[in-house]
Amino acid sequence: MTAPLDIDGPAAPPRANGELVFAEPWQSRAFGMAVTLYDAGAFAWPQFQAALAIRIAAWEADPPPGECWNYYRHWLGALEDVLATNGTVVAAEIHHRAAALAERPAGHDHAHPHGEPHGHGHHH
Amino acid sequence: MTTSENTDRIPPALRTEALEQLLTERGLVDPNVMDKFIANYETNVGPLNGAKVVAKAWTDPEYRQRLLADGTAAIKELGFSGPQGEHIVVVENTDTSHNVVVCTLCSCYPWPVLGLPPSWYKDPVYRARVVREPRRVLAEMGLELTDDVQITVRDSSSEVRWLVLPRRPAGTEDLTEEQLVPLITRDAMVGVAKVHAS
Image (cartoon, rainbow over all chains, first blue to last red; front, top):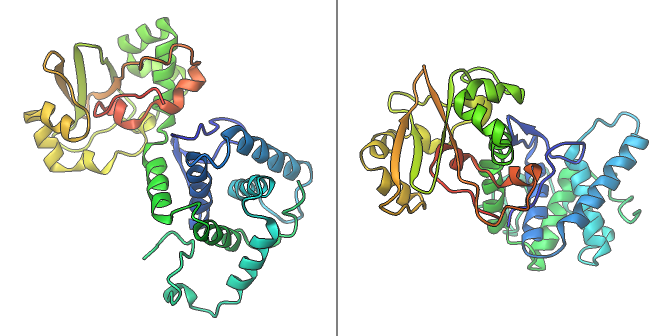
């Protein structure tokens, strides 16, 4: 089941010549999580679209100083909002896990002693 | 929604990684399945320009006529033109006639409407075999055509670039032009796949 991605307007994913463009690996992971969860029935697409529209509108109404437009930042935020609303993953859990990940020593990208997925799009 | 205010300060790459770990641990996301999804969207979503052309032709009979009469001009009407977009000839697939595009000499390809060519399009084996045994090559690619469907192999060249107008799938009668666009894949516009209703 293909997610009905918006084609025009601010909520439409960035494209080049019609094709999806990911500027950084995390963007494709954030994209992948949303479409995979949607396909598995974790949420209805309109719920995600609405959350994305709210995120984008909030940013446009009051852009944080010095922060450039980044579509997938809003995509990720919308996914977090939907998962929090549905009780799947709450913000505090993401916060704690991200804090733990941030404390990894430099060079963690080149050794994976835990064998865990590490979200950079090059699983082993 | 304010629950995520405290995560907004964390760099998105880290948040993404944290979220993927949590979802994976809970069995909600399988990273390997996700890899396949991403690859599928990257290769099959879009090329939007060509899909818009096809969706318009499906919903606007007059546009369809103009498109089949002069592909380049009709495509330009929608604002799509550019390198390798000159001399596009559009051929229509029907119940009894199927067109598949190849370029036996090089890999000529209508970029402005179809985006980047898929890797197999440049494969010398595909180029040679699709001319010799198109029915078999298409079947191998997942497109089974019955013997009563005549297959025409269209050889792109620097003079002519082909775009296939695929058949509109049954069950899409109620869809609008905008709703049809996401269904139309690059492979369908090269003639190696059908368009599916969902």
